[in-house]
Amino acid sequence: MNDLKKTKKELAVELEELREKIKSYESQDGGESGLFGNNYSFIVESVPSGIVMTDETGKIVFVNSLVSATLGYGNGELLGKSIEILVPERYRRAHSVFRDTFMMSPIARPMGKGRDLFARKKDGTEFPVEIGLNPVKTKNGFVVLSTLVDITERKLAERLLREGEERLRGIMENTSDAVLLFDGDGRIESVNRAGLVLFTGSENGEIGNIWEIITPEHRESFTAKLRNAKEGVSVTDFETELMKKDGRRVPVSISLVYMSHGGGRFIETVRDISARVAMRKKIIELEKSQIVGRMAEGFAHHMGTPLASMLLRVQMLKEDVSNIPGCEGILEKLDSIERQILYGQKVIQRLLKFVGNPISEKSPEDAASILTESVDLIRPLLKKKIIDVLVDTEDNLMILTDTNLLHLVFTDTIMNAVDAMPGGGSLTLTASGVKVPGFAVITINDTGDGIPKEIIPYVFEPFFTTKPAGMGTGLGLSVAKRIISDHGGEISIKSKEGEGTTVTIKLPIFSEEQQ
Image (cartoon, rainbow, N blue to C red; front, side, top):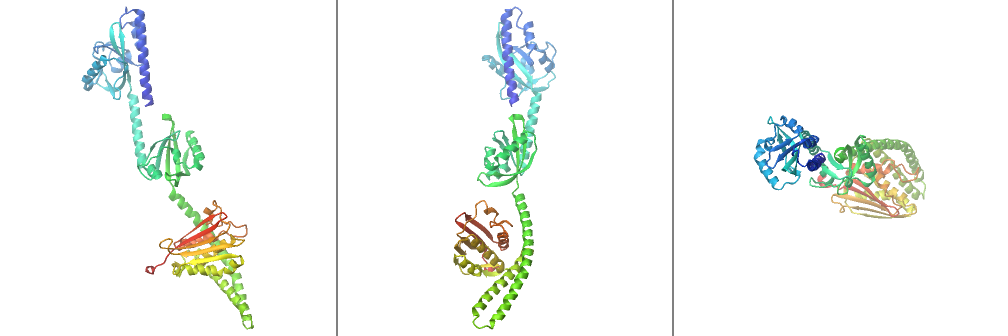
């Protein structure tokens, strides 16, 4: 359209210059050499457009050689003919009416504004033209000076461009990727259906500017990619995050193409790679789980021998003191130590089996009882650390579980809470079946140091620990998450520095119908 407007402007300028020259020469020769003398011929032949002059009745009084050659007429062959000879037959009657109307109020203007115009050659063929009209008052009366430009090539280019745009639009609407067309300021000129659905959730949504969907922290890198595309550097499969209208973020892969014509435009193709990212995370988690499994196996094998030796020594001590009067208290403590060692061996055996084949052996058990038992196992340590314990549980919270593995999760979580309260504090444990329908919800809350906000997303990662070097392996919570997931449940953490931490575990409630 810019080229079309430019052509019309050029025509108007040419007409005005031609009109002024005619008036100038007419005033100089005093009309002695006639309206169409040598001076006029020189003027119109110098114009790089087809020129046709008609009198007030529509008779052709002059044409330049460019018109004759373009229309297939010989020199002088058109003189005295009606201008309608150059008009396609189907338009001639209407054209004569338009011509009479124009002569009633002759002003310079383009002809047929908003309509396609055609000229007719001598052999009857037609071609698209652009025509400008300019009335000139001479001493011999009014003449209409018309410029005629063959726009066949322009129309062909417009048609090809239009067909290309239609093909592009068809591709845009039939691809599952989002496609956005925007200018250098980010104003979106076109977005396909997939793009509207991805970013607004509706085919009827609206996106006004590309920067509406660029996350603040990625604006600088996106600007760099735009610059690369503009410089001709390939931008394909660039992974980033974009923002939906509701504020949610979506991982995407972006390709950018810059089109220099038409003021400069960018075509951005956006592919939702949520599934790809999720699969990548699963692969990473699987690799980490395999590492955890190997670590756990190594740990279990290395701990097995010392535990067996400790158990043997405890059992020998029990035999030695059992016959000594007054040693009942010592025997009771040895019994407690023996139970702890046996429990440790059992947990190691179950953990070994779990990491080798994460399908645990489950049976209906009371979640509240398992939680209470876990607290009892480390109650002496809690007392020593000056930690007040409150246990509030509902009875008969039946879940399908591997008791030993769930003990491991609870005790490890409680031990983390103990480590977070080196100067003592409070520990609150609850088990409820009414907070979330269909689930037993267990919470373990401490009043410890809390966890920094930026660290919380990583606490379930294998080998990640907030404890000083040598004080933790970073495996506890990752194993706990794996065990809880195997139970069909969820584990999450909420924490605030200086205010403590709450671990929430949700496990499906077991019903009689499941038996």
